[in-house]
Image (cartoon, rainbow, N blue to C red; front, top):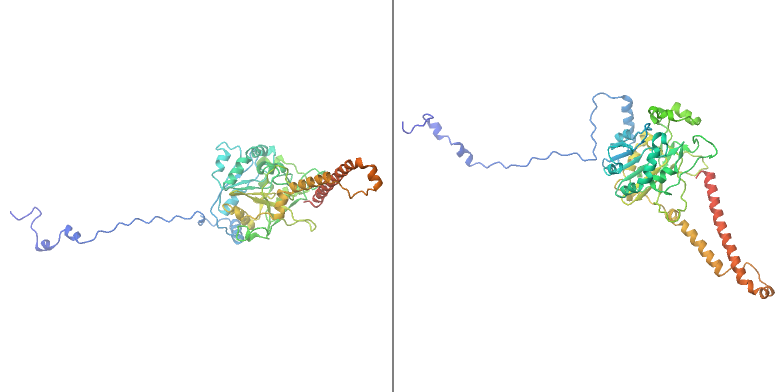
Length: 440
């Protein structure tokens, strides 16, 4: 039939109902809004989730003490590369554990790692730490190859520091006596001078110039990472690492007990913090460049008549900084781990490190030149003027020996010059004797 559709007859209600197009014609289309991106967590934040189980009570108590004494540092999470032993029997390296406690990414590797060239991999990290005794030259632990590598590659390491890196050299020693060659290899010849044995005539391990407590000096600047630690002691007396922890595996068989303290260490544990110290500044050799070092940490447990000795020195270098120490930093007490985090906090902030005083800076850089200038002036005056006031010439002698007067003046000038040089070297000799006497 006409007027009918295939869908059947329409009722009045169906005729009055608007169509779908008519219903949407008067409505506004919804505005499409971009989805909000999921907030990402900042890099310096640390998320610690609940453990699967109750955990070790001793570890929980240790973490609680660490949190109580921890000084928060407002710096981002850093990538730390640690140079460990390269031999088949590596010594203990505890920086992974410390990095976990301080929420930094730590990787251990040796020089002979065939995976990637060391300097190339170093470019991916902000901090380089040389593990204790890793470059002390001991062939049994592969430190001899690391020492030769440091002598050859220290210009590249210095270049990396100049671009903003932080270099930390832990204590490098042989039989608890600091190794001068190790610091010269990585820092450059003559940059720092380390102490020797207390008695060079005695063989065996050093037992006197070691200790468990140090103190942060008051040279640190306000509102800097080390400011909360100014004047405070840091120690290792609570840390008793076993002999197997210090020399795991077959490494302990390579060492002979060479003294009473060595025997006690093997029985009760190793808790030494520093082994030796840095000597006071001396005139640098001619033509040798030196960083402007400043003492950050010094001994705090020596005898009353001894002056404090420097156990950590630091220096700026372009955009980076260098920290050299005779301490085993990884052996520090748990409650003092914030000190290590404060050192890492100087990354990107090297200008906040203190500088030497004016007198100390002159001693480090210009004392030898000043001595040479004084000697040259005295030599010139002695030859040009002569010492007429030293001898009383009578009129008869002056008339009789008038032809020899210039010669005598030159001769007495040379004698005066020799006396001045002898006095200078006598003062330097007395200074060396006093340094050895007081263990400076």
